[in-house]
Amino acid sequence: MRLMLLGPPGAGKGTQAESISREFDIPHISTGDIFRENIKQGTELGRKAQSYMNQGLLVPDDLVVDLVKDRLLKEDCVKGFLLDGFPRTIPQADALDAELSKMERKLDRAINIQVKKEVLIERAVGRRVCKSCGAAFHIKFKPSEIDGVCDRCGGELQQRKDDLEETVIKRIEVYLEQTEPLIEYYSQKGILMNIDGEQEIQTVFEDIITGLRG
Ligand code: AP5
Ligand code: MG
Ligand code: ZN
Image (cartoon, rainbow, N blue to C red):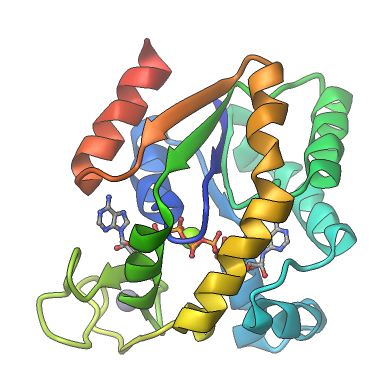
């Protein structure tokens, strides 16, 4: 199955991606996670992406597109994949389409997780991520067992640099301007699936699975 997750910052893409990729045994490809890993490793790509990310802006299309093209050529993508946070602009979506056509493949579904603005801000600002393994928690909605400590690996939890309230607000603006048009884009292709993201994490997951199997 070849899937992509669409939705504003804090909608729950990463949270759902973990369960969906496990359910269908397909790789979870998050461009945000790839950039954060590159920043941590101090690579050239990380250096280029960092200033955009910290301001809540999108990284330029050419940097993102090349990275995803390379990733899709990896062996594990033969059985399918789940894109999280890509494409995020119309040019990125066109580039993905062209690349998949070359491989004689196409996207099966675009899963659009819908959540209103006030909820998004609370989710993003309260999120805590593990410094070591990247697992995400929420101080209110998904607390770790021990405050500040990762349940999965014991690593230290921290706030993402772009999860300060004013940066979250900027990211939402950028989403509305540059990414939201993709809803219409995928609707016209007949592969859009809308999901109510303002429910419990498990209920959102069940709705997605029902939608994909139905
Ligand atoms: P990216 O990392 O993709 O961030 P984002 O799209 O802003 O989305 P988030 O990761 O913030 O939210 P999410 O939807 O994954 O929510 P989560 O599941 O964590 O991108 C970061 C930056 O990288 C971009 O700003 C840009 O600069 C750059 N970038 C990345 N891709 C790019 C691209 N293609 N082009 C250009 N630039 C790109 O959930 C959030 C919180 O809520 C968590 O704490 C979670 O526990 C909690 N939660 C989740 N679901 C629920 C629920 N149902 N109920 C209650 N709480 C919930
Ligand atoms: Mg995410
Ligand atoms: Zn961890």
